[in-house]
Length: 380
Ligand SMILES: NC(=O)C1=CN([C@@H]2O[C@H](COP(=O)(O)OP(=O)(O)OC[C@H]3O[C@@H](n4cnc5c(N)ncnc54)[C@H](O)[C@@H]3O)[C@@H](O)[C@H]2O)C=CC1
Ligand SMILES: O=P(O)(O)OC[C@H]1O[C@](O)(CO)[C@@H](O)[C@@H]1O
Image 1 (tube, helix red, strand yellow):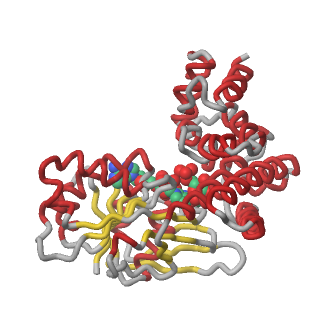
Image 2 (cartoon, rainbow, N blue to C red; image 1 turned 120 degrees about the horizontal axis):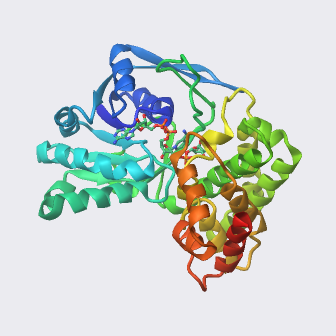
């Protein structure tokens, strides 16, 4: 069995690649970072170090690496005979992955079993987004190519921080992981991924994950940065930050209970587990990494504005979520392009234009006025 995985970064090596290897797949990593591709090509194996309670080392082997920028033909060739294609590149990069999969499907023999395609990004419906890009590219050929693949949305959860200098291709991760995959598209022939679970309706799972793990993590990052903390674990040790994260997560839990019928006690237990994960002192995770790309995180259907709008529509509290939005606007980073772009937009646009452009909220939407006031206060 063979799996082609796009994006050999933190989650690619430290989670998706690890589980595919343990499921018996020969792995082909595809990336555009030449030093990373070279390092993987030179390595026979790498080690995934799980740090924190219950953690162990796992060794990943039987992999190769291809630079998709330099050798797209080789990537298409690998896809033509693969069983599975996964991605962990970031939601905005999926449009650059689509041409490779389309090219691979063109080469794929009709009698092959359908290629199983799963985008493993922190986003709602990421595989649908990828398929949309592919369909657009394929044009009239799409019905033929689409018959050669199945597409399943997934929700992946494991904290894989930025890696320390000199770690090579080894990866440090938390012991916890969860991978939920839509079962419907597979018609019984599921990929063999130990520890993954298949669900008929991914919607509630991915919203529970995005609006708890990712909302909570982003809140810890933005409130932590505002409080002068550098590590996520240090941010959570600050009583005020902890109270802010808890308040925000109580709001998203109330929404998830109202919308999907999760039990109140189950959500409380889920929050406790997640806050413990964030507090893992052995995980070298920073507010800079977790707060990265604030424009994406402040967009309409993402982890802050997304649940805030739905909560407001139900008459639920959104004070915590809006405090996180306020802190996000104050976020600064020398490394992150989007953070700098956000700060530039704050300087150049008026509050209404910034609110519309960044959050997707329109005048007249329930939260527009409150968010616009927060933006205006930041600008004053
Ligand atoms: N790190 C984490 O804890 C988690 C990350 N995720 C999601 O996984 C995705 C990746 O995140 P990370 O691994 O943290 O980022 P990362 O930056 O460590 O890895 C991304 C990789 O994608 C590669 N890449 C960029 N453009 C590419 C292209 N056109 N073709 C092939 N490869 C390309 C980069 O060179 C890099 O190696 C994001 O969507 C993130 O939200 C999801 C769950 C957890
Ligand atoms: O910030 P992104 O790109 O969504 O990905 C990083 C996220 O991944 C996680 O580490 C695990 O889902 C989150 O905690 C973090 O917010």
